[in-house]
Image (cartoon, rainbow, N blue to C red; front, side, top):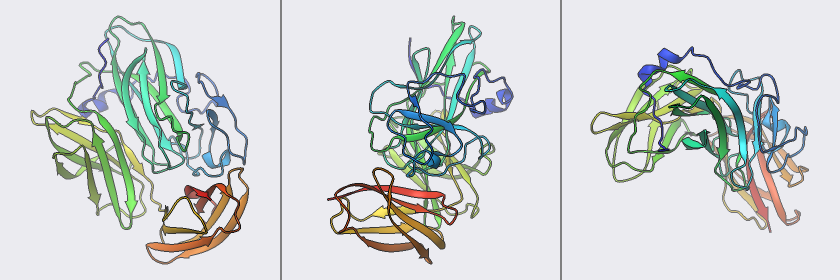
Length: 371
């Protein structure tokens, strides 16, 4: 079977927005049921669940101290599937089998996903009956929900098996959550084959601006990119244009977003012949926080630069077993704060530096090695 990336034209969205979702418990509101996975269930509260383990719950930080306290995509307070990625290839993240479909019909398979730890983001791949429909690298920004979608034409098939995989096999990170899995019938014709494959789209907060970054694997016929913004994840408006060049990576600075508002971004790629495709959606929540380690491994002093909004924060260090070995309150009065922490009394090994707000919600965490 010919494999391709299915690209939906947005003019069709309104026509199938209310169609029946054929996925059972796609928002995990019924808990740990109605799906298969190759991961091991582990909802140990207050610990650090290990590689290839998962939990259906409301807060990633409750099952791993270094993960961000993200709300689910559906309501912000409901369930999601939280996973510690594996280094073993082809382990099923999520799967639902034996879904009855109509022959010669187009379907759209979607999932919302986010990193819960910034290092080595997961790369989500969607399969229908073993054929790849979409593959997207998640943003390293935690709690930034992104929608990954692919379209599938059923042909003579009357049943479908939906599978979500993670192609990133680096165990140093690769921690994620998924929510709102859907599979719905859409109008035909449903697919446009384009000479471009989206590698990623990220939205990052940098000082007082938002930066949208994206990359594609080919641009032979690409004329330009249009960056679009939304505050509800549904209605988008164009905010700028970037011309195609001799590169695969692009960026756009947004200086006009509403301060304090959660923002959604997507990029529209337009060919010279007028054909177009959309990237996945990158979500940037209206809060800030970032740790830049000056050096790693660390010998005597942990040197860092911390970016966050003005306010009081908790800065903590945990060892690999989750034991807190250092904590202090810090006050940020400007865009950045330089900080040095002596680690001469620390034993050699792996540690986590964690920045959290006054409500103990994790904003950022970084690994470092003391040697």
